[in-house]
Length: 84
Image 1 (cartoon, rainbow, N blue to C red):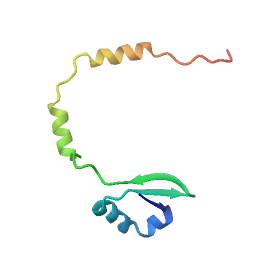
Image 2: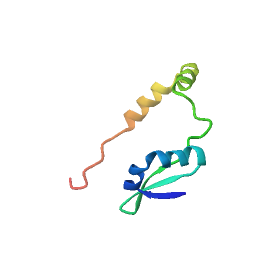
Image 3: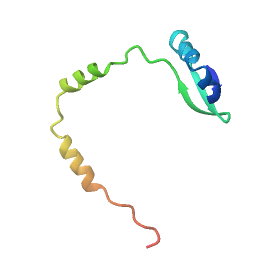
Image 4: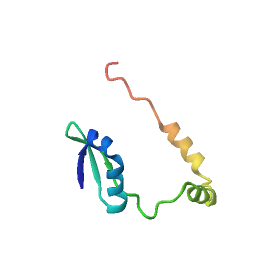
């Protein structure tokens, strides 16, 4: 795991992305010495957008989903004001 300040990352972004892609390394991005993000390679099983759309279209609809949403919405109540 590499820890790198944002300024350093901005100056050498291509180098760090290559280390992630080809070296399998993880880069933790720091802002004022505090971790704010993490760069790591994508899992090999990651689908393309086209593959995702095909899976979505081939998945059967859940007939009771609309009823479930209605039940959740009916049960939803605003929080009571503790100062009333």
